[in-house]
Length: 542
Image 1 (cartoon, rainbow, N blue to C red):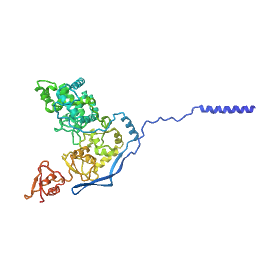
Image 2 (spheres, rainbow, N blue to C red):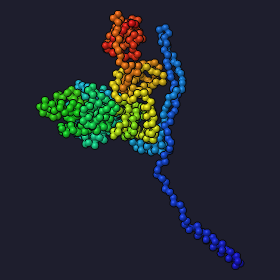
Image 3 (spheres, rainbow, N blue to C red):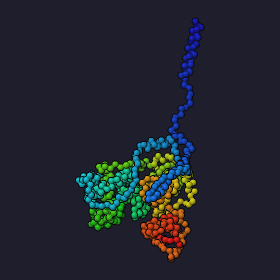
């Protein structure tokens, strides 16, 4: 019994010892906190994909007096390369998260027209009674530093815009969603009335590459000399008058200096348009009046309509909801874009190709690069503006992008253009593999412009089709000899025709029986279709 008891006690003591060992803390390895660093995927590359190109050719043949059209479709795999640049997935996700906090928008149509040539005849517009207009103008006058007083001329302009330019204003309102936040930021920085933002509509219809007949350029229509005064440089590659941010900063400085002179925003706007000298002369001729409406009849015609256009635009934008405007929103707004300082020369074509952004969008976001080429010059801050969702893609792959761009530059037979005067017009013959975007990039124009110049309703082209193009980037016809042409004497017995303004090879061939366009080309060594007034054309084989 005692023996059994001692065994029980020993067992219980052993169990207690084991439990005591379990409760004694033992040293453990320190627990590492989760790292906040983002592990970037390495070896991301710009991939190349070969795409299949399908050429569709329409053959038109004549049977009797009827035209019959047959379509021949040929399919062939070509070395057409599409680049796909990838971003780090985690960083791309972070970009998308903060982008959701920004303004969301839909597609917009960028059509620009000039807001000029005002008429002051009475306009019937039943949706805006005169009494209602007077009340709204009084409200506007109370909250702005401008003299928004009712007068028949202003009423005429407002009603004319509402009646005849509704669609145009609707599109400008959509475009303003991109530019106005930019304008307001700079105007606020320099303590200038925010309503001045409407001035850019009157000046350029919000077209950053707008150029007037006298050479004023950009959103704020700076002349070359005035732009230089306020720090806007112009070179063969870059025109800072077309840069939205730099031009807006310069415009704010200029307007502030004009207000300091006249102490009146109406007169500051008038002098912005025609120069301070014209305004002071108008004040003298008016007997010392300083109210815009009292000196208006002594201002140049364009300036006389300038303030009414500005005030009418301000009224319509401020009371847009009262007149049924429902503007479409732009796909990209200013706060959804960001800039990258370029590290070497690159073209917008290359950026478009390597990171899959439409060339038209890049031209819209980077309007100051005249040749669609971003130069690299030491100590100059030339930047590429992109939608924020493409910034990460570019930065992630920038070494490869610059390497590919340099390799492409190195392959060029001739160096990049310094400055040449572009031909006024060319006739382009569509070749196999061509499409509108490719042709547009070649000549530095927009697809919409090519369609407008040629009356195209779709993007479809046929091989051999002739297109009229007004190139923006310098274009040198390769068929022309670089040697100076030596004028050949035309024998006296050969009939000669002198080209007149408006003539074409076709119209000339119709004037003379039995002469075709090919005859005229062969007899006169013409390779294209360009002829100029004053040229002498032989009308027979010599």
